[in-house]
Image: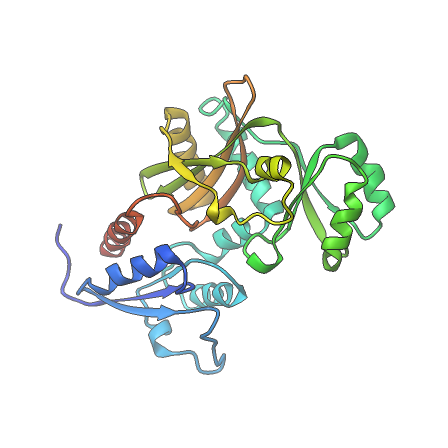
Length: 302
């Protein structure tokens, strides 16, 4: 493969404490054709009237989104026509669980002949500003899972299982600051207790499985579950999953992403329950090498 002699300016905006990102950054720094500009959106903020030239002249901006500062950088890239791995519209759609739900359902519906064994749970958006009204609405739909509208905010993110209507009060007590915001509500699907996490890097697909955190909660009655500590192991990727990966990549304009599947008991189908742009990749050995190779080839082909 022929690469021109010009050094490419690549801005990487991510939390440097993330284990995979830290390893990836070290790999990218060794690429002599890259002038790697690292930006930590939790520490490095902007003077809006005097944005750094290194951002304005970037050949590519890559984000592992964590906060609004990262989103702001994508908006900046759009105004100045700077190439990004994922554009601002794509990231905003993935950030917003309601918009993401629309996109996932449309993709499955548009390609239903190719992914007929992939479904999505019933879902709704609703407010808890009137708790009694919410209870009346929710009662015939139980069990449900209440999820945060914004999935990129790790400090204000929740998945709360409601099996009995009285448990809504527990949610209101624990997350009272969210009672005046719409939440995303998903029908709880009884499954085999395993969550299958699919990771996609370009045309490569990887899979790991772990115990579903909700089932771990139900079994151990814990107040808090650190999902990063749940053991993971690889599992075989099927043709259906590869087809689904290709469809989601094309329809949602994603290059690096992950999605979650669960399998109902005694059924040969999957439910698609979530998707994340640039996920953690935890449990995939040496995944930083795959990410490095993909980014290198992506920049070469700009």
